[in-house]
Amino acid sequence: MPAVIVLGAQWGDEGKGKATDQLGSDVDYVVKFNGGNNAGHTVVIEGEKFALHLLPSGILTPGVVPVIGNGVVVDLDVLFEELEELQERGVDTSNLKISSHAHIIPSYNKVMDGASEKFLGDRKIGTTGRGIGPTYADKMNRIGIRVQDLFDESILRKKVRSALVQKNHLLSTMYDAPEIDPEAVADELLAYAERVRPYVVDSALLLNEALDDDKMVLFEAGQATMLDVDHGTYPFVTSSSATAGGACTGSGVGPTRIDRVIGIAKAYVTRVGEGPFPTELFDEVGESLRQAGGEFGTTTGRPRRTGWYDAVVSRYASRVNGLTDIVLTKLDVLTGYETIPVCVAYEIDGQRVEEMPDNQTDFHHAKPIYEEFPGWTEDISNVRTWEELPANAQAYVEALERLSGCRISVIGTGPGREAAIVRHSLT
Image (cartoon, rainbow, N blue to C red):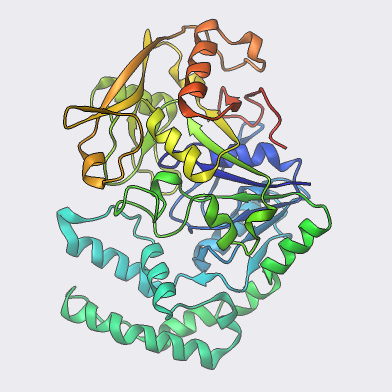
């Protein structure tokens, strides 16, 4: 059975949760390998909406083992809030596994996140303020707190004290904020030790043994390609590896075991936060896309910036991830537009550029070059086969496939789990 990576091919919010959920009935394990609760997945099952922030969306599929991998940063408050909410709604969460190597988001990193953004002012990155970036920074600086540290009080207290030496200095001298008591933070974290213990495993061993036993493992990315810390629109990115390579480092499963890499892309584009966005719409059309698509953050509630489909971004995502398939979501949102522009290239300093600029300054100044396609007026929310799609909708999908350099295997025609057209099997 294959190991399959599902990731965002744009700036996030493409519908990865739905795609993962659709594949869930065929898989045995669903692994979240990066990020934290700074991004959310919304999944609709039989008309019931589930908003997940930290938990893998596979937790909604009976029989699937959801795994939080070592590449994830875990907010323990959020973890148990989500678990309790799902349990109250009748979802069995007992199969959840959490890597002992995953890093914990201590409360002081949420304070540092907010203080840093306030200090930067107009130069802010646009983080969600949930302590994600500071926790990844601690990981790289080797002062992070890991899940396994909860089970050794002396080590935990030592690590918290060490981390707060520098942070308290910054808070008091640079950010004009009160210092934080390390013993109080350690007490907060230790209170979760016995609650989290039943979920903790050697996740790398678990997943490799699952593949050895011919189980199907699906790797679910948080955020998306254009927010990847290496390959995204730096510095307006997340703090982790959201591309296909991150699935390996964030789970402990080697690259030779990966069979499929599936990129999720909206039929248009959105982004949240600061940073360049060549096809962004600032007029009533952009607002109509926002309203029709329900483009408000699952985690933050922030209105998403909206724009037309960017094929340059899609070609880039196909290349850096080695995509084998694209799942195109929210095609139904485009119903009713007389014509639908697609960005096929950029104009930079008077030159036509068809690939992603290597220089961030060039990308910031890129102007979209559009090709327009005729729209359709027919309601496609109940369409479940390719043949039923209006001819213009078919032509639009075929154009995106050609321009993106990767086959479009599934098309989303509505928010529900069943609202999809399958052109090629993903497994």
